[in-house]
Length: 342
Image (cartoon, rainbow, N blue to C red; front, top):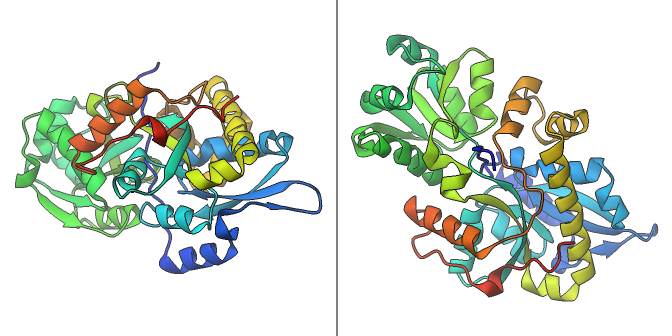
């Protein structure tokens, strides 16, 4: 396994968009069969790098081979679970944090595969702050953390704030002594940084790399520099999630979907720089430059098999508890399965 990490779903959508999505999604948790004989399913995505395997599955014809058509519904971490529970989407490309939070509430969800590993995070500092503290992309992690000890940080989610805290504490910097500015979204983080209202922020790619590409900041920490974010340490991987009742009632569709996504993640693992992969990334994150997309793709551990394991999930639970996201996180053998994979 490479020492890459992958990320968490951080979509930027409004309540109005969610409302439209709920109205247009397949209702009642059921898929639908069209006149062409193909089954149409709705999948909740986050508009980030972890959606790539699903986009590749469509571009490469893997869904078509399974007699499936896919409709995309863009959701946030806050709205994904409710969309799945309401039946507005049949499949949810979900972060482990959200999945474990749903389980902690007693919701009958089932993970049927893992289609990307790690935390593709970037810590980006503003241009003026970087110049003042002589920070570059090659500055050692310890020097970066010490420079941040007296700074103003932006935070648009409790998770990324906690993950930033893991990095700081590993270098004896107390995150509680920093000034934190709460912001509503990663886009707001970026805007505040360019205006000089904050010195730095952490969020999932591609936003940090895009800030760097635009000349407004420098990414001074990433999973290659911060082992606490790395897949090997965190065991954090994206999950394909369904309701248990849907898996029981539509097993063939679940198997077809899971099979297509596994084929796609295996394809990405073997062809990261392939034009088909890059083209799917452009669809997933429109507007991001190609060099930013390529760097983001490389930060995810793309599995050759989407199989879940007890050991991997145990590591994931430990990480989620460590960042305080779901203090009572736990997963049982009834909450995941590999039986729908080829």
